[in-house]
Every structure is written in C-alpha cells, then in structure tokens.
Image (tube, rainbow, N blue to C red; front, side, top):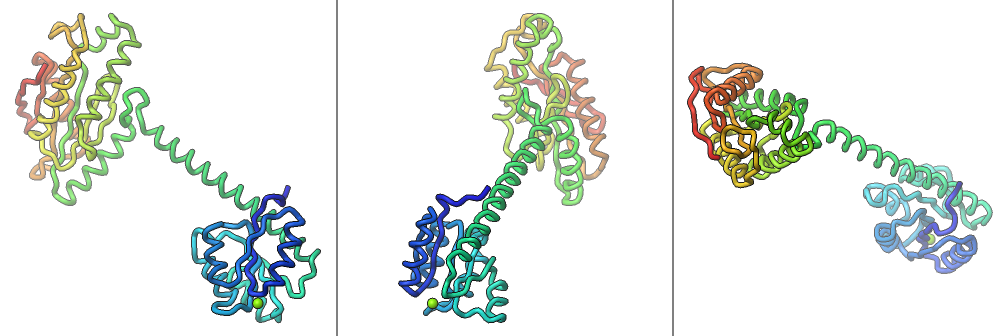
Length: 327
Ligand SMILES: [Mg+2]
C-alpha cells in the first residue's frame, strides 16, 4: 500500500518554469502541490504545512538547499519530512553533501519524469509506514503508561493501592533521613465496617468506601500520599509534617465524614459511620525502619480501637496519647 492521492508535496525552487513544470506533472498524478521560491519561504512553508515530501532545489539565492535541509532536520516539527534534492549540480561530492544534510534522495536536472515519480512514490510509501509505526508506538506507550498507573491505583476508592504505598513510603523514608526532614503517617480504619456490610450489604459498603476515599482526597494536600492499605484501612503519608500537624488533618477528615452523616444503625457509637486513626512520625533522634513507622501507626490505631474508637491516637515513644476526634 502506498499513499499517493492526497499527499502534499512542497516544491522549493527559485526557477519559476521548473516549479510550474513539476507542479503540473505532480498534480496530474493526484498530488497536492505547494510552491516556494526561495529557501526561507521553503522552510516557513515546511514548518507551517508539514508536507508529506519536499522537492528541494540546491542552488538558490539567499540560502542554498543544503542549509534549508539541515535547518529542517534540526527542527522537531519538520525533521521527519523526506527531502529529495532536485539539482543540476550532481557530482559525487554534492550527492554526499546532500545526504549529510539529511536528504533521502537525489534527482538531477533536467528531470526525467518517470524517475522522479518513481522516487516520490517510493519515499511517500516509506514515510507512510514510518508514520504508522510511530503512531502505533505512541499508542502503545500511552497504553503502557495507563496500565502502570492503573496497577498502582485502587479503582474503588480512587486512591493508591498497597503496592504503591510500600514503594512511596520507602522512598520518602530514605529521603527524609538523608535531608533530616520529619514525616508522619496516618493509619485510619472505618469503625464497625463489618457489621455495616452485614446489615446494609456489600454494595452499600462500597459506597461508603467511595465516599471515604473522596473525603480523604479533598482533605489532603497534593503532596500527601493516600493509599488503601487493606479492606477498610486507609494510610496517608504526610511529608514535612509532624504528628501534631497530622492530627489537625485527621480532625478535618473526621469532621467532613461527620457532616456527610452516613447512617450506621449497627454502630454502637453514634449511629453514624466514623473513623479511628493512629498516627506515627519519624523521630530524627531515634531513627527506626519505615516498617517500624507503619507498625507504630498500627499500634496507635488499635489503641484507639480499644479506647472507644472514633478517635485519633498518636504513637509517641511507646506512650500513647488520646485525642478526641469529631463525630
Ligand atoms: Mg536553482
């Protein structure tokens, strides 16, 4: 398959008769032809129109064809346009200079039309396949990117998943230690979620998870990293934030959930869906592993569960402080 009809060919030549002669012949073959009478105009037309192929004269006033070709090959927008030199100057050194400038072919003047048409056709076909290949590659790259992204996301809550969390936490943990910056971790869990699912059904349970995901997304800052850790557990990594500052964010999330007023008749707490949160931070005077930071937040969370739930607890050197959450 070749693409012949509809292809746009740009002719750059200072010789008017030559332009007219080539234009007539190419138009007869079904090509769309555009003309330019010097190198500058030719470059501008190539840049603006992005033709499928160019026939470029070598000897022209102001700037010659070699310079035009080199300029086109330097420009991302025009570098893929195949250039065929059409010239009376065709000794071996000229041909070498032409290929060095980036041309795909040479045709000598006076032009033998069947030869020119054969070369035009051949290079248009090559360009057609190259364009298709490039487009397919771009589509594949896009798809790959999307797949990678999807494989790190939790589709239901529209936050990151556990795998992405592990990678992000390790990265931030190492950076924080190196630059001596604090960070903290919120470990949150929906209170009495199993009784909710048992009573209202899993579809309703999914709706709660979606809502909680939305609340976390709107409450957290762009630099925070929110992930679903497990069933109804959400973790947030907060760079450059200590535990006390994280409590403020935790309180805001709890207030927002409280305002949503999601009925939970099987919750012995308040008949509404609530959260319990455990918070840990990186202590630069007592550095532990990132797994330890997760464990500390988890211990604080369970301390909160054992102390009435709907609350925020900070883990601090094994001493657990209780903060009353909203709700
Ligand atoms: Mg000329």
